[in-house]
Length: 345
Image (tube, rainbow, N blue to C red; front, side, top):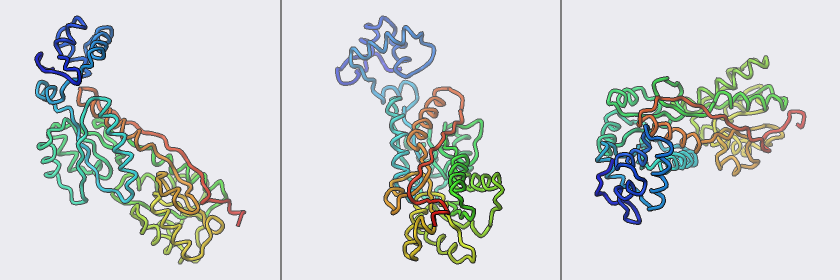
């Protein structure tokens, strides 16, 4: 959808030259370059070969002007307590955009984000669609604004999914069940759980998975073993302090993420509590923190980059006319030395 006189990339080849080399029209070249449908496979291959032979690279600006698209998507995110999460998420989203010939525009947000701020971002950048990360993905005012404005969006790790919206995330409940199953298999029955940020859907899903696993194994859930948290180091420290005041203390603690688990570990060391001899500890995410604590944390590894890549890929497809899709990714249990069997005490 470029003009025939527009020059391309490094070799200076034009879209007209590509069309001549492939023996097709300029419009057909444009459709292939922009990954549009309705092009026969053999024709598409011929055009792609001509593009490669001539080292042709379309100008994004020309594509946007001709097709009323900017070939860019935005990503809204809140600054997390542990930066490795957003780092891996950005890696995945950028890789998908690069593969699809799109630009990725970032918009860091704070908890006081308003729909007006989102509207301003979309209008100023003219992005074709928006990736919403947790907890923004669950903001009904934001999704309502984008939906009423006709702006495509995809949710990353939302609490609830909508068949009309594209969403991608880990199976948090299943992963949490697997982690609790592992702790139970080590003989623990007094298992504490430190919750995450209540604004994040992952916090609720991980708690639900934990409680569901206990129920399935006939282990009564003790409300005193469930403590508030916020996905950060300090909430882990506070959680351990609260739990250690109980008359019947836990033998294991599952924290809703690795930062909180690290707080538990440090607080335990400060009190002279041996890990894992006296207290076993587990986290979630397999962030760098998990291997920086002593002992290293048992945790759950979620494929953050792959999730972000797929979310961006599906969003771009949705912008191009494909229907919305909802997908979940499995996670992997990573057993390390922060947990031990109860009979080792």
